[in-house]
Image 1 (cartoon, rainbow, N blue to C red):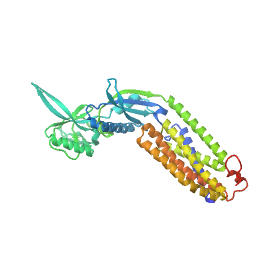
Image 2: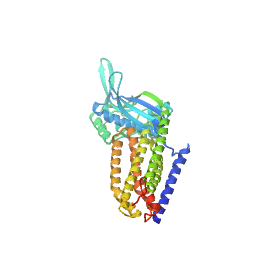
Image 3: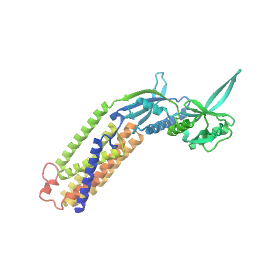
Image 4: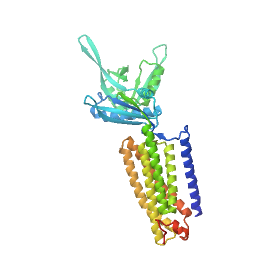
Length: 439
């Protein structure tokens, strides 16, 4: 028993420290561990972009839109926004056609102009073949899309080649394509030797080199007329992610936190009321084990809130719902344990033996119940939208934490206090229901 009392003391101190961490970091406005709130709770900026798919083959539009989403997510993360929400959708335009749109939610960002400027710096990179058409005495140059865009770009680097003026080194931008892009680049250069392969950035040609030979290896060099500073900025922006398709800003709006404040207040009240009711019921029905379950549940909440703060996980209204539901899982596990323990007491086992056997017999039910919840949460996170993923992530973490709380913390506390014999006041404390146990 002494060993378990030492463990119980350590668990209690750890729980108090976690609660202290959660309280103090939230009370300090400058703390880096304050809760990160989503757009629905903290307010922020929402930007809606239209993706121009006119030059993208129909069979590649889905992949291009996914690549566009990934590029914007990387760009927004570098902008410094915690947990941005970037979604794609197809919407009906006024003309009756279908538009591909990109919806960007930036929690906590109130400066719309700064957000638009940051995303607007992301360039559109394209490679096009130049062809000439002669009509009478007029020669027109047209550019044909090759399908090689920033979608296939792996990295960009700045280098200096020999300059034509006074021996100065001219800035150049070295492009490295991924494996798929390297194959496409080699195919283009091998089939069009002698033609001009123009490099377009944001719709403007910045370099028009002539293909001298097939170029394997997936490397291209831009030798446009720009300064070292311009080349450096170009490399930086290309590494942030060149857009696979052009986008134009359709609308922007600032979302106020009024609704979010109401959701936070409602979620906190619901959590407190729910916890108090559950704790009172557990204590009234299971007495000492119920009190231990309430303490373990409080430590579970402190642990979960600390995890949410330190990872950090951006809290949304759906995430709060996932946390509250996971509390029910923690209570359910304790109920299974206490009911199994009560059955062993009725059969004449001494209290400590009954606790050991009760935990052992409840283990399979607890394991299977938590496993099914984990599978459900993982599927929701894998297949759901960003809003559903916020719920699923908190729920999965909560299920894992409730599992540890039920099979470890509750067991340690019970074995630290339960005596060998069930006599005197222990008969009442280890009973259940609203009458004394006579077993």
